Image (cartoon, rainbow, N blue to C red; front, side):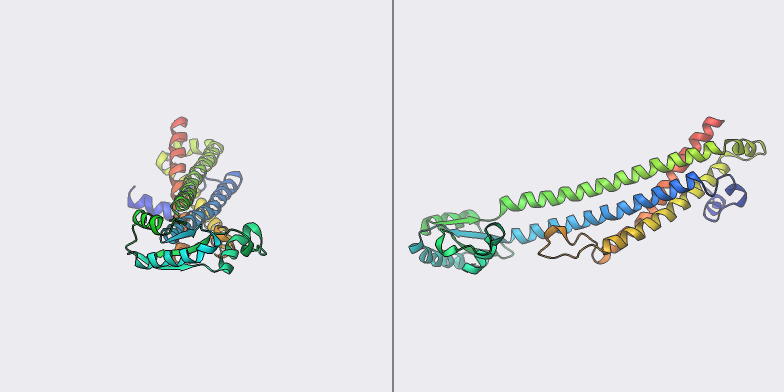
Length: 299
């Protein structure tokens, strides 16, 4: 494409613009399709970025923590807890270890058994929170020492909980990215249909233009420019509406868990701004393909 064609595409040609109807079914369909798909793409991107943050947070938090349970009779629990704490303090790679109080254990069980659970009358094991440092510790060696010196100790490094959670969050992120691709494909299909309808409706005008010497490239340029601008405007409105909707979502909180904090953070708010140019690019390619194919059929 030479400089003149690029200038005409950006600034327009009044004579060529008359080929494409400025309003009507095709204009409304293009604007609506671009706006609706851009709106959905904003939420798909928000879900993708939030899923990525969630996967990273779960991986980081659960990877650096472990739980030691002391399953011992009540008369031996205090002694074995002290022995386990002493071993953990001597273990390289363990940053800190502390026994949870009865109130903390009751708070952990409250979501399942209620806030009035009488732990004193139940055989609930003593829990010890273990935090590792950057180097980490030898879990296998620690289990062997605990089994020899503290028979009632069971070490849980949260591996069986961490992997499924992280995999689920990563799968959700991939699903969101696939949704963005499907949205782009659906947008291209709808704009192609609208362009074909406009070309068919203006078949007689196209034939007259050919008779007076207009080339197919000149005619196609008029359709490409009009539909590209329509898609850009529609996508811009859809992105603006979508970003307002994302901004109104609840902020991240521990009480809400992963159901909150689904919006963008920091520089992530700039990510939806690439949707309108991409939508215009999709419209450009779809309309150019439809115009060349339709004009070839009319030859």
